[in-house]
Amino acid sequence: MQSDTSPLADPDFPGRDSGAGAGTGRAGKPSRSLVRSETLIVLALSLGASAVSALISFIGSVTKPGGLKDQAATLNASHAPGRPWLDLAWQLFGIATALVPVVLVAHLLLREAPAGQRGTGLRTIGFDRRRPGFDLSRGVGLAAAIGGSGLLLYLGARATGANLTVVPEALPEVWWKIPVLIASAVQNAVLEEVIVVGYLLRRLGQLGWTPMAALAASSALRGVYHLYQGVGGFFGNMVMGVIFVLLYRRWGRVGPLVAAHAVIDIVAFVGYALLAGRVGWLPTG
Image (cartoon, rainbow, N blue to C red; front, side, top):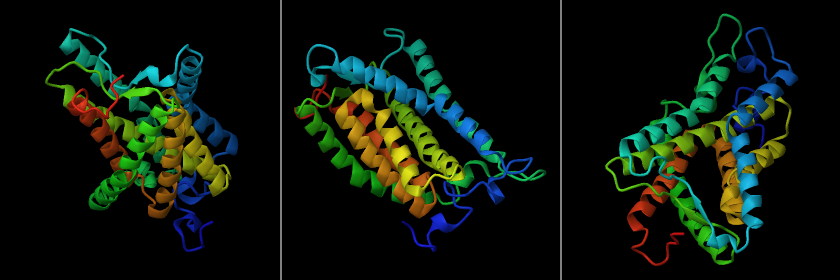
C-alpha cells in the first residue's frame, strides 16, 4: 500500500482518480456502467482481442504433436514475399492501424473535462513531451535491467520445453527492413503501455478497483496476450507488467515505460536480424 504522500493519494493521479475533477465527463461524472462499457470496448478493439487470439494460439500449440520448442512464433513476417514494395505497404498499414486504439484512447481522455473545457488527453497518463530526458533516461535504464533477464528467462523456458521458439523477424533482406522493425517496436511499446497501463489503470481506478486488483488485472492481461509464445512468455511478461505498474504509480508517467519497451523490442528485433545464424546460442526456429 502507498502512503498518503504518494501519487496514488492524489485524486488527479492517473489510474487512481475516482472520476471527479479532471475525470468528469462533459455532462458530469460518467456512470460506472458507461466507464465499464467504454473500457471493454477499447480492450475488445485492442489488447483484449489480442489476449483471446493468443489464448487460442496457445491451445493450438500445446495440443499439437511434438514439443513447444519445436514450434515457432514469428513476430514480424513478410506479407508479400517477393514483392518488396507491396510488402512495405502492408507493413506500414499494419503498424498504422495497430495504433488506432491509442488514438481512440487519446480522444476519450480529451473528453474528460467539464463542459466548455478541453481535457489533457494522453498528457493525463504522462505520455507527452514535457519530460523527454526523464522518460528516455529512465526508459533506457529500465530496459537494461529487464532485457537481459528476459532473454535468460526465454532461453531457459525454451530449453525446458515451456516456450515456443520466438522468431522476432522473418523479413526479406530489403532496404526498409531495419526501419520497419524499429517502427514495429515503437508501435508495440506505445500500444501496450498506453492501453494496458495508463488507460486501464485509470479506468479501473474510476470503477473503484483497489490498487492491488488493478495491478493484477493489468499484469495478467499483459501475460495472456503473450501466451502465443508459451508459458515462459506468459510469466515473463506478467512479471514485467507488475514492475511497469509499480513504476507507473511511482513516476506518474507512461513515457518511461514506452521508452523501455521500445528499446527492449528494438534490441530484440534488430539484434535478431543481425545475429540469427551467426551465433550458436540464439534459437532460430
